[in-house]
Amino acid sequence: MARVSGLSPRIANILKQEALSLGGDAALPAAAYSLENGECGALVMGSPALLAELADKLARHGGDLADLGERLRWCSRNYQQASTSDGLPSALGGKPWQVMGVLNITPDSFYDGGRHLDTGAALAQAGRMAAAGAGIIDVGGESTRPGADAVGEKEELARVLPVVERIASELDVPVSIDTSKAKVAREALQAGAAMINDVTALTGDRKMVSVAADYGCPLCLMHMRGTPRNMQRRPRYRDVVSELIEFFHQRVEWAAARGVARGNIIIDPGIGFGKGLEHNLTLLNHLDSFLSLGRPLLVGVSRKSFIGMIAGKQAGDRLPGTIAANVFALERGARIFRVHDVAENRQALEVAAGIGFIGGDAAGDTGDKGA
Ligand code: HH2
Image (cartoon, rainbow, N blue to C red; front, side):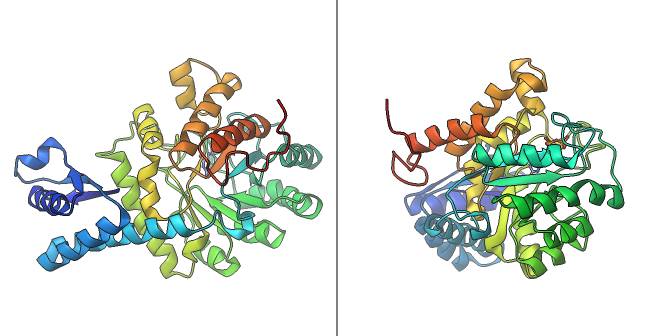
């Protein structure tokens, strides 16, 4: 399946006819049948082999149809790579899926703000999360909740570096640095971090891309519309899924052209970052469309406000909703789950992965098989 956007009604209709002729199909919006000017998207249904065949057919038309064919060929290749790859980047343990524990060294994070400002308390929390099965610890020194104030480079470094150093030297778990500042990322990697989590998808600090390329480490590209200060002011999308897929397509190519290995890139739709309730739910529901990018998907749903909007609960009471969203996301193809509550989410995901045969046989290697 591949989702494409920005098609004229004429191109969309030819695409549908050609897909049908090969035994596939393309779902088009009603606007595509009016043959008036304007743009529409299409959901092309078929196996990776069918997408490649369709690309060949479209190439014969030349022009815009050939360009569209190239997009489909790219999706087809990504799907094939994704289905033959054996898990997450090796620096993250190469497992089929992982829980990423959230560790904010901030006074103002929306859930764990102020809890780990002391390095000893942060290290103890990291230890608890690792013992509970976190495969990655994500250390952040700047809150990105809606309306949060920006933090200066010096302050952010002072918050995160001692914690990164201690975890890297004392615990056996990879550290991810959650920052959009190149200097913070570089120093954290120098101090032992193994991954960059950039919520601006390399659009914030121009130097970030060379840090990721130099260190050859896993890099999470997250989508955000606007900045934490203004992102929740009436976010609008024509088609949120297609627009984000196009965004990631461009960001992955941009990063790869500057030396970042594609195999190190992880994609995250950025739940709650410049999205309304409907956008967040649509993205989670259509996560599988992002698999056409051929990269592992990370989701950060933990205790976020969309859960509160549905369940009418405050952040402290959103663990059940978090688990539901993560289990759903696993089924839709997500493979890294960024959470505050590692033990509870891990158990739920282990059971869901076992039922879905995700990452091995039904029994897996979860130890105790007793009744
Ligand atoms: N969410 C937050 C921060 N970093 N990174 C990725 N890749 N994906 C996310 O969804 C994500 C993220 C926000 O959550 P939290 O860190 O708990 O809060 P705050 O930004 O207030 O520190």
